[in-house]
Image (cartoon, rainbow, N blue to C red):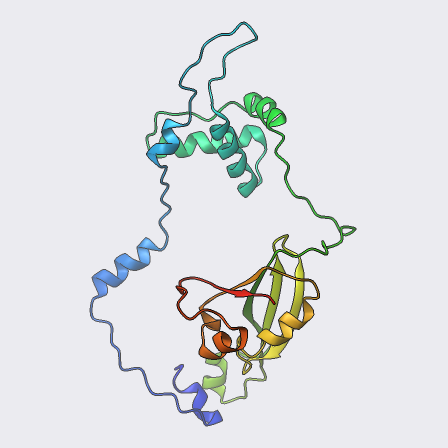
Length: 239
């Protein structure tokens, strides 16, 4: 049906000719999407415990390295877990992959984290963005406004009464939005780039973009070196 829907608007969309024949491999691929795999490098396992646990007379010797404390703290921050729940969660992961290491107890984590002086960023509505911007990341996403779905339109021959918009956002290194544009779906990411950069009033060292902005016009306009490798992002040097 997706190839039938645009015919009422005069769009020339060819009918899909690809037919799925390898159903067994296709079903296996769908099952792989629901898998959750955990991998821990051998280097991380070797750095988990202190190699030399000697008693110097100033208290109990450290069993876990600072690396282990920081890893447990990062996992805790990602899943927003209390210390005691983080201990159980991390130990369950180690048990599933049969690793002979354990998570530090929640009391050990609390004491060691206080000595490491790790600061976590927190934001409130009274916080103001920093005037100094070091880096900008730009991307876009599609927004559906309202309307009937495709099945309803095809079944009852009614209009969509729906429109799409594209939201272009420029975010700095502190996750603050420095610029935004709301355009229709026909505006390309490349076409909205100038409007986003104009909203950034401060100087930035570079702007990170994805492959949607990988075009000759962008290279010529911002004088990017054509020999630089293009992988997951581009870097536009701000003049």
